[in-house]
Image 1 (cartoon, protein in one colour):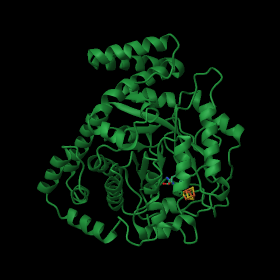
Image 2 (cartoon, protein in one colour):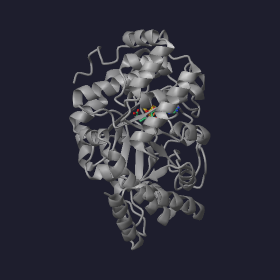
Image 3 (cartoon, protein in one colour):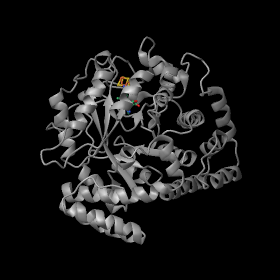
Image 4 (cartoon, protein in one colour):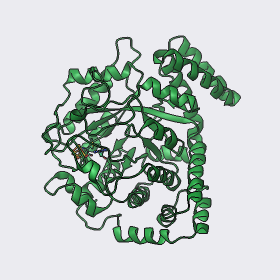
Length: 470
Ligand code: SAM
Ligand code: SF4
């Protein structure tokens, strides 16, 4: 794959033309696209641009309603939980929006030692986490050897009672070459995330100063193609909303998903849509001309759900609990809980944000137990399931199952089992009360064969077995 070619699958004049055309579409055109979206086969760029150009509040309400319906049909009531773990905050890049940028002299830099890393992992395990997203800056000292070492260390680390363990590690790390991706494949990571940050090459050039490695737009744009070449097939895209105009970014995400699907017969496993948040000593984060309002954030989430219905959507603790509750219903399938993003802060004393150790501020600082109880009260089944990855149901295999609706059945049963395990081992009394009530209803909704399978597994759990899945 040539990464120096100027022509990429992102064609800004074409995207702008499509958006301009979309903005001229009539209410009837929007309604027609919504009918097509209801078939859950995804949308073309032209159709997506029509939804993005809609100016009618009632049709937006209809878009939100449809996003909720699609989420319900494909993902049911499950929400997968994970925790981000920042391993080092050294970085050689100079991204204008990030507190880790090399010119930020006011940041406390640190890379976790092996002992500190084990302490962080144990702190996460002792509240019930099973899935991590390990996050890295980009620095020559912390290349592939450091990344693999820290991943292996985290997998190895268990709590003394034998119950706490990490079963899946996803990573967010800078683009690599195919050889390095083969190493990641070999050691067994879950999903590999690279966010393009912005799909608008002009804005990209403004926020990533020349001379830095990150300034190479195509190197980043094709990073997940290289990962696929290395057979690392669960890959995740994302855009940092707030850099360029939000509608343009939605189109960029769609073109990215389409190109991957065309070349590798599988789209991205998940999509992330982080919003730019204030960061220590980083004025750009509050001055950017394209900051996204809550209202527009809801719109972009709903349109993403409609345009790529089978792609998991990740909603992070960057957002406040109230907005998370609202947006969750519109198609999100994964959220983080109990997140702390200051280096070393899971095992430390300090609560909440620690600005001069963090990449940016987060606004949902609730504990994992609180997040889980809230989800259960809203009728969602929190899931810590890691079965697909361990059964090698990844990449095209996973998408094949997803598109035939089988994910729903297997995942729902595994969600019940992993949620029960959380309740038994880690939950507060109040969360247990709400959670077991929900599980009773969930089991009652299963057909007889599946109910027997789940009840059989729950008996084994009562007898002390753990990590049960189908
Ligand atoms: N250094 C790696 C790279 O460049 O790919 C990992 C990036 S960083 C640790 C993870 C993501 O956080 C970035 O890709 C970016 O989208 C997001 N991020 C950076 N600054 C942010 C901010 N101020 N607010 C919200 N998200 C931010
Ligand atoms: Fe470094 Fe990533 Fe932050 Fe850019 S976004 S400064 S590459 S950690």
